[in-house]
Image (spheres, rainbow, N blue to C red):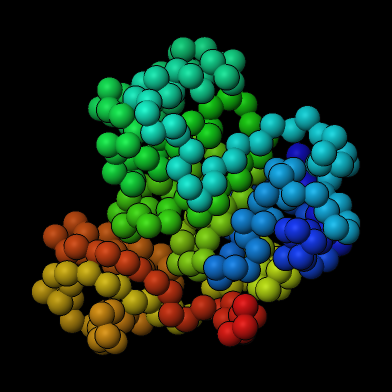
Length: 281
């Protein structure tokens, strides 16, 4: 599948949010749409799904205008998309019928996403992490050529976020996935390519390996960290670590979690895309 975005502008009520952007996707992989809140990530996703029409330019799927294409898209918005009054079992059966898939396939998805223990629970009674797992599983029912995931780990703790990313990687090995985030650490943990937005414009598009640096600084907010490591400084509520790579950061977080530390937040503090992001975005 090939996705071509050419000189594309769009927005809401005549107000332009995306300004003459362009990029091309033609290989399977996880493409991280990276940018601050308000950069245009959700607007881009709505345009790719056809929810927004262009002011200028075009979006083409395999040479066909998006609005005329028959490409099937899985879209997970940043809000959970399961009716609150249903049990997980009823929801999965319902969406399976909508997608026209067999009960066996639904059973496989339930097993893959570890939903068995949740089947008889109502959606509104689930934790945020459980709701996200169910929403993701529902979005991936059926044969989809393109998967659009809008900040799927928002408001989840680092452990649950890591589990969600592992599920996505395992389920989408041969697919094109567009995954939005404002966190470079998360982008490097899951992605192969980056499309960075700032102020509604594409400011970087390319291999995520091109963003790696020899020095990688992260801040971790949590409890019990000071009892497990010594090579940190303190900045407000954050333990600051100077590392060599996101892989080293992942190892540190895994070590802290498995040793009993409570980790509430991880954020990157040495963003190689920082030169693109000004304070006005």
